Length: 219
Image (tube, rainbow, N blue to C red; front, top):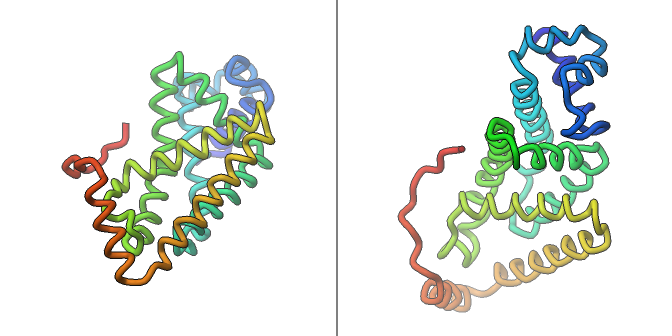
């Protein structure tokens, strides 16, 4: 990637942090990057395409940064703990603000919606890898739709991140509730063989019929 192209991507992320989606323009991005605004169109064709490229690269960088941490996860409770670490890191880096702005823009712009969805899919696929590893040891494997569960977890953490901007105390309570859920799941994992079989059977009977499994295609 050329130096100018990278500077424009970095400047787009910084502009989202400081000006929000409403303040995004070729002029503001070029000013942050300290380049001629014509270079936005030369390298990306449009501001929307620059936003899409920036969103995708930012997500790829963050996922790569946490990949080793996710590889250490050996249980659902550990996954929740890793998610809490991720939340704190992303908040400190200002990336929660960027995500909030991209989600706001996605409500009115199909191109931004597609770019934001693709970025979120990177996180969902990473979570799927973890769930594929840890779920078989739990009774939840009887009803688990791994792709759907990965997206549910992603949505939960995104919601908490956005909630924190309005009510930090409530967001912290929500994270604590997830910690308690993790403790309950860990207790299920520690059941003996007979109790585990009984729990699996009960879950199978209580669960709705699972739809046929299909390969998930990112939107």
